Length: 240
Image (cartoon, rainbow, N blue to C red; front, side, top):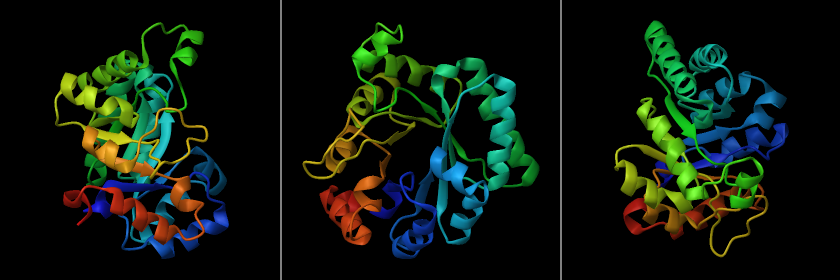
């Protein structure tokens, strides 16, 4: 179902607009993404608010710290009730394992389902020249593959990668992991600060599990119409 595959990102939404979007999107999408800006402006209560409004919450804070700190943060995220969370795969195997172990332990203690723990590979705003400036000489696709491999070796549920890398990841790493793809731009789409983008149909064809769409929906004059237009771009088997 399309409402299960599209995650609407609330990152560029002012606090007053969140409630309005919830009313418009209720029953049309299952999951809303809370990023750093909204989390800092609204606090942890925004997760409870969205859950009470009937949505699953993808809490995308991209945790990256020493293993102990990340483990503590993941336990807090479980307590909030998020259904998905992110950690930077570049934090290394020990940090990734600590994130997963802490999430599972906190979920067992509370008797709740463990959120999906996803490893962020290379941000969609980065290109190869940006990696080189940071001392990474690999092409983007190879760096994404290395980081995705670390995440999956650590037992994480999946990765966050641009739609341009998903097909290659599936070939290299198999087809069972979750692939969440930001940088989705409908139609001919603009790219704004995103660099490695694709249309919804291209991302699904490449093997994406979930499509993260923010500004094309949240900043549209009619968010419901914008969502419906994106759904029409999906293959029939995904949009029924």
